[in-house]
Image (cartoon, rainbow, N blue to C red; front, side):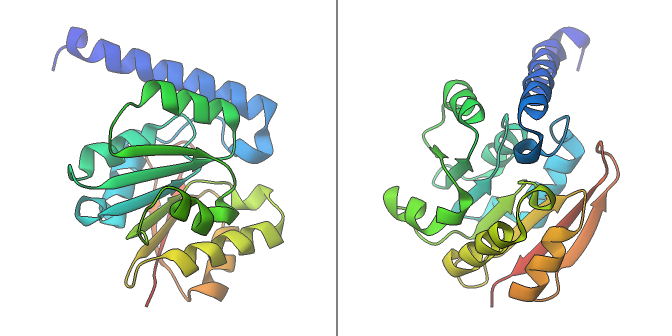
Length: 199
């Protein structure tokens, strides 16, 4: 593919990085990283989550929507993707930039995932993918989120969390059991990807 063909995508990613960095400067505890996920991490998340086979997917903390776009490319035409974003700026950005009939943006806390699914008439999700920074939130909040995720997952559903630090692994291990772990080095910073299955 030539440079002319890829330049709009490059411009979009550059704008996404700038928006992400600006929100990090304003709310570092909520954003948790200075730049969005790399395309390598996005592709790994799609594979690990088995998103291509999922009917209902929930993304916690989609930010500017890089991973969201990768998920939408992978999902079937009949699937649904619910993004739960606590930052009003990011939520507005997603509503403006991602117009897809399969996609719903909800501004609010991931602790309320059960109520939010009910509000939008969605069934138990096959996959919940989380990029929210567990290491910068109170431990009780993190525990509430992971318990809420476990409670709503479909049988054999997956919870996938990608993090720089390991707090989510500690919390998740107490609630789900031991996770599968992968590392994506082609990301700044390198990310651990944890996966749990509800059984």
